[in-house]
Length: 329
Image 1: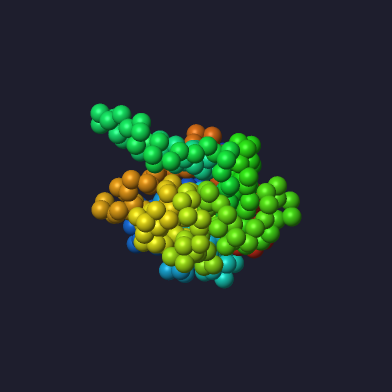
Image 2 (image 1 turned 90 degrees about the horizontal axis):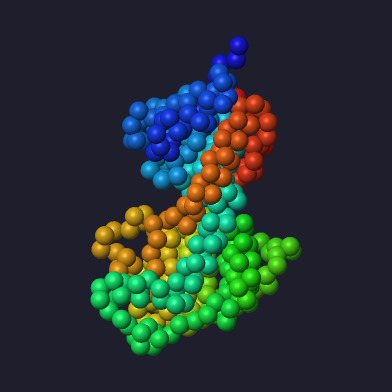
């Protein structure tokens, strides 16, 4: 009888929940978890692991040191779209396919982007704070300038599953939508624009692109300065794409009228971080994809891919260009 596959699960969830990944496979797979949530415990546990389900919090990162210890590792499944919690280069060099859960939470994140844009356009969070403390700022609210979504030009930066859905939702509300991505999409419903042109023309800029070596710091002071004066910025991508000091400066000077941030460069941001308390920032704790429907879809995608790997069937959503059929070592 073939030895069971060793599946190392890193998410900070109860073991009884994690067993749902392996129990349906009978004796074909066994679940293991680190004895503690430390780097040392991860290094010990990964030595014999064949399949790793990554940690969506990033606390137990699969960096080069962890990959070097993983002598039997054959497949890594991330329970999210982003793969910045793993050393993709080291895993690729080791011949280990890495998969994400592309599309599982796209609708949730796209809806958050639209909802956040609504909140910024009408200053909903700003008004809520004042009414709760006894105020009634009708005149002040109108003086801040309120907008209707259909009258805005929306620029979507990144046209993957999330960006494309967000573009569709904004268009359905009557907004004129354009997009930019590193790869121009022939099947896109929205108009393609060069990045700087898109920024200069858009009243609402939605960031929905992955964090990579190419996109890290993409929105530095110079690029933020190219955004249309008084525009709104919605970030559902990654915090490392935006220079937060430059963003603060743009908000302080009025170059940007507001920002909705589901992601930050450091998560959670420091307690004294000015973005936490800025009047024109709508802050969210990286939960744009956190709906019941999205979480169920992610769990199902992870479970299906683990099962496919164990059975020798192709896994889906491999992001590092390796063959989707997982081979034991």
